[in-house]
Amino acid sequence: MDTALRASNKSTTPALLRSYDGLDDGTVVRACLEGDGRAFTELVLRYQTRLLNFVYRSIGDRERAEDLVQEAFIRVHRHLQRFDQSKKFSTWIYTIASNLAKNELRNRSRNPLVLFQTVKKNWEADHRPLQFEDVRSRPDDLYRKRYLRELVEASVAQLPEHHRVVFVLRELEGKSYEEIAEITGCNLGTVKSRLNRARNSFAIIVAPHLD
Amino acid sequence: MPVPVRGEGTLRRADGTIGVPTRRGMDCREFRETFSDYVDGLLAEADEVRGREHLGACVCCRRFEHGYRAGVRVLQGLPTIGPSRDLGARILHRIRRQPALPVVAGSYGFTGALLAVTFAGFLVLDLRGHEATPAPDATVLVERLPASPTFDVDSDADLITVHFVRGDGDLLQSDPYAPLPSLDLFASSRVRFVAPAVWSGR
Image 1: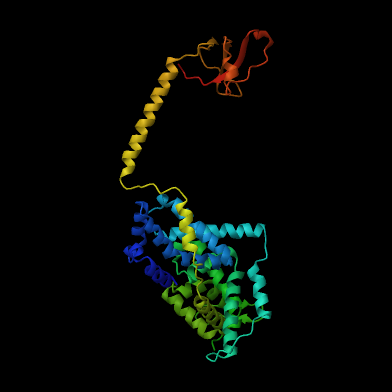
Image 2 (image 1 turned 135 degrees about the vertical axis):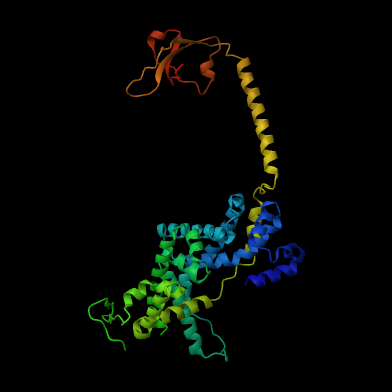
């Protein structure tokens, strides 16, 4: 997705962003601090999809996830001078996004709402429009795949919030234990314990269906 | 099948089945407790061997581990969500509306020094201005200043009574931060109030 975005962006603004290709985040951040506006555009391009997916998996609402990603970048821009350049930029930006997601879930638990997506899911099951047959796949295979996807997504959504964030960071974002500890503000022992519980819970929900 | 060891480390599951320890000693409970480390390959070599042997022997844990890995594969294979087309533009638009980032490279020292000198200059001028123009319409009389500090139970500060003599211009009236005059009937034309002062020791 990132590659596609970058490619489409290159076609429209070739001279603007190519100069940052292959440069590490630290260099781009330094350029940004020196007043180069294009450098921040590069950071947005690099991280918007990753952050969006991370926040979406954490809160389960795509529209809201976009709002939070937007807010995360605003905060990054506002506080970039405070960023400790001896550390990884990706960890810092994930920390900001993670805190925003955490706040969102906290607010939601105070003011529970029925998400439109939840309603829409049920609607889709009953009122799916007529579709032409796809000769490449058998309907039962398609159904099973779709069922598994929904099952797995639902399983992740069922995890407690503090377990889910750790689980998503590890399994989907591929973060190390140390990075997760930094992002979530927990110590290493807590991260390991939460991850183990999250993995066990996930397996207990999913395993009977995937045997 | 491994020979079960009786009574040691057995695990009764919710469905009524009992997990049995294998000969090498790892039981279902220990396997689940170390499952995360096992998945990430963080167990010591000996423990990893024990874990693998347990998996070979215990159908339940084998299903559990297989189900977990399959579930994660499905999860990782889920299509990523792309940002809406204008997300980047919206972010950059909001950022452009904000004040620009201060430039940090090298110029901080000079700018900071310049600001400090300017501020100090203003401060000195301001203080001198205050010294040069004493309040023309009010006289401050220190009625009593104790030779040594007196400490009471409630406060470390001793009290100095200060009398303000009202002049022609009503200074206290025009100053919004001036203390309100106390209702002292014996003060006649004077306004009396008591202000705490910290004893300096001199």
